[in-house]
Amino acid sequence: MARQIRQGAALVAAGVLLASCAGTRMNDPYALTAIPDDDRYCLSAQRVVTRTLVPVQMQIHGDFDAFVKSKATIDGRTATIHQYNWFTDDGRLTGISCKLKNTDHLNLVYGPGSAGPDGLCQDMNRAVYELVRREVPAPRYPRVVFDPNETVFNAASPGMTGPDWLAPFTLTSVDADGALRIHTKGFIVNFLDPAYAQMPERFRGVHYCHFIAPGHLRDLLTGSAEAGARIGRQVVPAPPG
Image 1 (cartoon, one colour):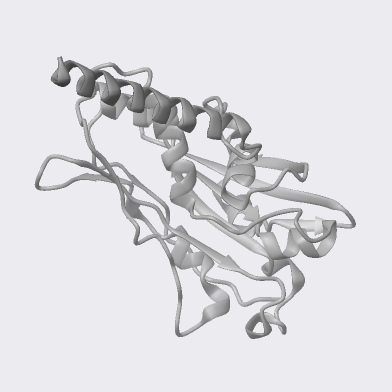
Image 2 (cartoon, helix red, strand yellow):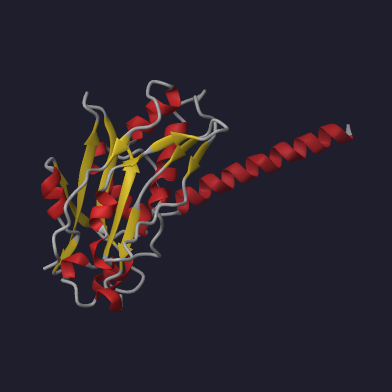
Protein backbone atom coordinates (compact mmCIF):
# COMPACT_ATOMS: atom_id res chain seq x y z
CA MET A 1 0.00 0.00 0.00
CA ALA A 2 2.82 2.43 0.90
CA ARG A 3 4.50 1.67 -2.41
CA GLN A 4 1.27 2.38 -4.29
CA ILE A 5 0.89 5.67 -2.44
CA ARG A 6 4.45 6.67 -3.33
CA GLN A 7 3.89 5.75 -7.01
CA GLY A 8 0.62 7.71 -7.04
CA ALA A 9 2.30 10.72 -5.51
CA ALA A 10 5.06 10.55 -8.13
CA LEU A 11 2.51 10.45 -10.94
CA VAL A 12 0.66 13.42 -9.47
CA ALA A 13 3.90 15.35 -9.10
CA ALA A 14 4.84 14.58 -12.72
CA GLY A 15 1.41 15.73 -13.86
CA VAL A 16 1.72 18.96 -11.92
CA LEU A 17 5.16 19.57 -13.43
CA LEU A 18 3.90 19.01 -16.98
CA ALA A 19 0.90 21.24 -16.37
CA SER A 20 3.18 23.89 -14.91
CA CYS A 21 5.48 23.78 -17.94
CA ALA A 22 2.52 23.96 -20.32
CA GLY A 23 1.07 26.86 -18.33
CA THR A 24 4.40 28.68 -18.47
CA ARG A 25 4.44 28.40 -22.27
CA MET A 26 0.84 29.55 -22.51
CA ASN A 27 1.53 32.58 -20.31
CA ASP A 28 4.73 33.52 -22.14
CA PRO A 29 3.81 35.96 -24.93
CA TYR A 30 7.10 35.22 -26.70
CA ALA A 31 6.73 31.43 -26.70
CA LEU A 32 6.35 29.49 -29.91
CA THR A 33 2.91 27.87 -29.91
CA ALA A 34 2.87 26.52 -33.48
CA ILE A 35 5.46 25.54 -36.06
CA PRO A 36 5.94 28.67 -38.18
CA ASP A 37 5.44 28.69 -41.94
CA ASP A 38 8.73 28.39 -43.80
CA ASP A 39 8.31 31.70 -45.61
CA ARG A 40 7.43 33.60 -42.41
CA TYR A 41 9.94 31.85 -40.20
CA CYS A 42 12.07 34.86 -39.32
CA LEU A 43 9.05 36.77 -38.02
CA SER A 44 8.63 34.09 -35.34
CA ALA A 45 12.38 33.94 -34.75
CA GLN A 46 12.43 37.69 -34.10
CA ARG A 47 9.84 37.26 -31.35
CA VAL A 48 11.45 34.21 -29.75
CA VAL A 49 15.15 35.13 -29.95
CA THR A 50 14.88 38.80 -29.01
CA ARG A 51 11.74 38.45 -26.87
CA THR A 52 9.79 41.24 -28.47
CA LEU A 53 6.26 41.92 -29.65
CA VAL A 54 7.31 44.92 -31.72
CA PRO A 55 5.81 44.44 -35.21
CA VAL A 56 8.43 44.05 -37.93
CA GLN A 57 8.36 43.78 -41.70
CA MET A 58 10.16 40.88 -43.35
CA GLN A 59 11.70 40.53 -46.77
CA ILE A 60 12.45 37.02 -48.02
CA HIS A 61 15.24 36.77 -50.59
CA GLY A 62 15.43 34.23 -53.38
CA ASP A 63 18.75 35.66 -54.49
CA PHE A 64 21.73 35.00 -52.24
CA ASP A 65 23.65 38.14 -53.23
CA ALA A 66 20.63 40.28 -52.41
CA PHE A 67 20.44 38.65 -48.98
CA VAL A 68 24.14 39.31 -48.40
CA LYS A 69 23.66 43.00 -49.17
CA SER A 70 20.50 43.32 -47.04
CA LYS A 71 20.63 44.79 -43.55
CA ALA A 72 18.18 44.58 -40.65
CA THR A 73 17.22 48.21 -40.17
CA ILE A 74 14.79 50.57 -38.49
CA ASP A 75 13.59 53.37 -40.75
CA GLY A 76 11.69 55.88 -38.67
CA ARG A 77 9.70 53.43 -36.57
CA THR A 78 9.52 50.64 -39.15
CA ALA A 79 11.79 47.67 -38.45
CA THR A 80 12.69 45.40 -41.36
CA ILE A 81 14.31 41.97 -41.11
CA HIS A 82 15.48 39.56 -43.81
CA GLN A 83 15.27 35.82 -44.54
CA TYR A 84 17.07 33.41 -46.85
CA ASN A 85 16.17 29.73 -47.32
CA TRP A 86 18.74 27.01 -48.01
CA PHE A 87 17.73 24.16 -50.31
CA THR A 88 19.39 20.91 -51.35
CA ASP A 89 20.03 20.22 -55.02
CA ASP A 90 16.74 18.31 -55.18
CA GLY A 91 14.78 21.20 -53.67
CA ARG A 92 14.44 20.17 -50.02
CA LEU A 93 14.58 23.03 -47.50
CA THR A 94 17.21 22.33 -44.86
CA GLY A 95 18.07 25.65 -43.22
CA ILE A 96 16.78 29.19 -42.75
CA SER A 97 18.94 32.26 -42.16
CA CYS A 98 17.58 35.37 -40.49
CA LYS A 99 18.92 38.88 -40.14
CA LEU A 100 17.05 40.12 -37.07
CA LYS A 101 17.06 43.35 -35.09
CA ASN A 102 18.67 43.08 -31.68
CA THR A 103 17.23 44.23 -28.40
CA ASP A 104 19.25 47.36 -27.66
CA HIS A 105 18.20 49.01 -30.92
CA LEU A 106 14.56 47.99 -30.44
CA ASN A 107 14.58 49.41 -26.92
CA LEU A 108 16.25 52.59 -28.12
CA VAL A 109 13.57 53.24 -30.76
CA TYR A 110 10.44 51.76 -29.19
CA GLY A 111 11.20 52.35 -25.51
CA PRO A 112 12.78 50.43 -22.63
CA GLY A 113 11.31 46.97 -22.17
CA SER A 114 10.21 46.66 -25.80
CA ALA A 115 12.57 43.73 -26.25
CA GLY A 116 15.08 41.50 -24.58
CA PRO A 117 17.20 40.32 -23.24
CA ASP A 118 18.74 38.90 -26.39
CA GLY A 119 18.55 35.14 -26.37
CA LEU A 120 20.41 32.56 -28.44
CA CYS A 121 19.80 31.29 -31.94
CA GLN A 122 19.42 27.84 -30.37
CA ASP A 123 16.42 29.13 -28.39
CA MET A 124 14.44 29.07 -31.63
CA ASN A 125 15.80 25.66 -32.63
CA ARG A 126 14.80 24.27 -29.23
CA ALA A 127 11.31 25.75 -29.45
CA VAL A 128 10.77 24.27 -32.91
CA TYR A 129 12.10 20.90 -31.79
CA GLU A 130 9.62 20.75 -28.91
CA LEU A 131 6.76 21.18 -31.37
CA VAL A 132 8.11 18.87 -34.08
CA ARG A 133 8.88 16.16 -31.52
CA ARG A 134 5.17 15.90 -30.70
CA GLU A 135 4.51 14.85 -34.29
CA VAL A 136 7.03 11.98 -34.20
CA PRO A 137 6.00 9.28 -31.68
CA ALA A 138 9.10 7.09 -32.21
CA PRO A 139 11.99 9.36 -33.22
CA ARG A 140 15.10 7.92 -34.81
CA TYR A 141 17.13 10.08 -32.41
CA PRO A 142 15.57 9.97 -28.93
CA ARG A 143 18.17 12.48 -27.74
CA VAL A 144 18.84 15.81 -29.48
CA VAL A 145 21.70 18.09 -28.44
CA PHE A 146 21.84 21.80 -29.25
CA ASP A 147 25.48 22.72 -29.69
CA PRO A 148 26.22 25.71 -27.41
CA ASN A 149 29.17 26.85 -29.53
CA GLU A 150 27.15 29.15 -31.76
CA THR A 151 28.86 32.53 -31.45
CA VAL A 152 30.80 33.88 -34.42
CA PHE A 153 33.41 36.55 -33.81
CA ASN A 154 36.10 37.92 -36.10
CA ALA A 155 38.85 39.14 -33.78
CA ALA A 156 40.91 40.58 -36.65
CA SER A 157 38.00 42.63 -38.01
CA PRO A 158 35.10 42.77 -35.53
CA GLY A 159 32.95 44.82 -37.87
CA MET A 160 33.19 42.26 -40.67
CA THR A 161 31.64 39.22 -38.98
CA GLY A 162 29.00 38.73 -41.68
CA PRO A 163 31.17 36.71 -44.10
CA ASP A 164 32.23 34.38 -41.27
CA TRP A 165 28.57 33.89 -40.37
CA LEU A 166 27.68 33.11 -43.99
CA ALA A 167 30.56 30.68 -44.54
CA PRO A 168 29.51 27.03 -45.07
CA PHE A 169 29.08 24.82 -42.01
CA THR A 170 27.53 21.47 -41.11
CA LEU A 171 24.02 21.97 -39.79
CA THR A 172 23.59 18.58 -38.09
CA SER A 173 25.82 15.72 -36.99
CA VAL A 174 25.53 12.55 -34.91
CA ASP A 175 27.50 12.16 -31.67
CA ALA A 176 29.36 8.99 -30.75
CA ASP A 177 26.51 8.02 -28.42
CA GLY A 178 23.96 8.36 -31.23
CA ALA A 179 22.52 11.73 -30.24
CA LEU A 180 21.56 14.15 -33.00
CA ARG A 181 23.52 17.40 -32.63
CA ILE A 182 22.15 20.62 -34.11
CA HIS A 183 24.67 23.32 -34.93
CA THR A 184 24.16 27.00 -35.63
CA LYS A 185 26.08 30.25 -35.94
CA GLY A 186 25.01 33.66 -34.75
CA PHE A 187 26.29 37.05 -33.69
CA ILE A 188 25.08 40.34 -32.27
CA VAL A 189 26.27 43.87 -32.99
CA ASN A 190 24.81 46.16 -30.34
CA PHE A 191 23.70 49.48 -31.73
CA LEU A 192 25.17 51.41 -28.79
CA ASP A 193 28.43 49.46 -28.52
CA PRO A 194 31.26 52.04 -28.65
CA ALA A 195 33.40 49.54 -30.57
CA TYR A 196 31.06 49.92 -33.55
CA ALA A 197 30.23 53.62 -33.16
CA GLN A 198 32.12 54.59 -36.34
CA MET A 199 30.28 52.04 -38.45
CA PRO A 200 27.24 53.00 -40.56
CA GLU A 201 23.96 52.60 -38.68
CA ARG A 202 22.75 49.81 -40.99
CA PHE A 203 25.56 47.56 -39.74
CA ARG A 204 24.58 48.01 -36.08
CA GLY A 205 21.77 46.81 -33.85
CA VAL A 206 21.53 43.38 -35.47
CA HIS A 207 21.22 39.74 -34.40
CA TYR A 208 22.02 37.20 -37.13
CA CYS A 209 21.06 33.51 -36.85
CA HIS A 210 20.96 30.29 -38.84
CA PHE A 211 18.20 27.78 -38.04
CA ILE A 212 17.32 24.24 -38.98
CA ALA A 213 14.16 24.13 -41.10
CA PRO A 214 11.24 22.47 -39.28
CA GLY A 215 10.55 20.07 -42.14
CA HIS A 216 14.16 18.95 -42.26
CA LEU A 217 14.20 18.41 -38.51
CA ARG A 218 11.03 16.32 -38.84
CA ASP A 219 12.65 14.27 -41.63
CA LEU A 220 15.69 13.63 -39.45
CA LEU A 221 13.54 12.45 -36.55
CA THR A 222 11.45 10.15 -38.75
CA GLY A 223 14.53 8.75 -40.48
CA SER A 224 13.64 10.01 -43.95
CA ALA A 225 16.73 12.26 -44.04
CA GLU A 226 20.33 11.78 -42.93
CA ALA A 227 22.35 14.12 -40.73
CA GLY A 228 25.22 16.05 -42.26
CA ALA A 229 23.49 18.70 -44.38
CA ARG A 230 25.57 21.81 -44.97
CA ILE A 231 24.35 25.35 -45.43
CA GLY A 232 26.11 28.64 -46.05
CA ARG A 233 28.22 30.04 -48.86
CA GLN A 234 31.60 31.72 -49.06
CA VAL A 235 31.45 35.43 -49.78
CA VAL A 236 34.10 38.06 -50.32
CA PRO A 237 33.70 40.74 -47.64
CA ALA A 238 33.05 44.26 -48.86
CA PRO A 239 34.34 47.23 -46.86
CA PRO A 240 31.73 48.98 -44.71
CA GLY A 241 30.36 52.22 -46.02
